[in-house]
Amino acid sequence: MLGSQTNSREGDNNRRQRARRALELMLEFQRAKARKFSESEFDPTRELEARAQEIRSRLEKFQPIRNDARVLEVGSGAHGLVFFFRASRGIGVDPLAHHYVKLFPAWQRRVPTVSGYGEALPFLDNSFDLVLSDDVVDYAEDPAAIIAEITRVLVPRGTLYFAVNICHPLWNALGLLRQVEDFHTTHISLRRARSFFQRSSLRIVSESHTISETRIAIRKRRRRRLRAWVKSLFYYKARLEIIAIRESR
Image (cartoon, rainbow, N blue to C red; front, side):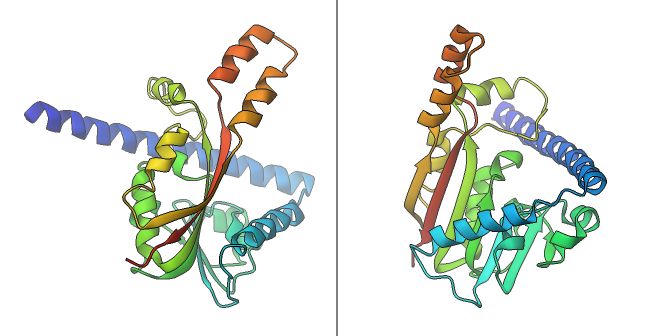
């Protein structure tokens, strides 16, 4: 019994350290990006707005989004969807929000943001009509806890847009053997991502992924054909998108 408790504590500490390291790497990356944008005067706002509105249109095929809808983005980052979603009552939450306000003021002032973690959202139950989680949970300490918190703050019949990079299960086992190098604290398989929604009140109404497309793209690489074929079996960073509705129960 004591051994299992010790192993559990060690596992918690390892996840916490990996999450902390991922945040450090992300902040370094975003600081470099801010400098690059400033020096080159590059402004991707138009592309960001187009993507946010395209996702909004997809969501509205399942449920209308009112003008006064309460919209939360978990992991809003430097230039998340919520900043370009045209939501009058939008808000973002991110562990690095206080840094991003200084690094990217033009985007960040579009909606208020709060410094916080997805595993412990600083909001009351049933606070939001729509929650966005776009390429976030595999950078975090506890992805399943984030989905549970999103469910808690969603109103009954509220909508979740969830997107994440997914990988063959082999990658998570390999990833745990080395330090966090590319923001990812964990590599999430399709089966694991689906498990986040099991035994919850979130009902998936739309799911799509690019596993086949990712494998084909890898196989088409001209160099090192045999290696590319092997890598296509153990695909890396395919895209999963889920739209879910919180049931009234």
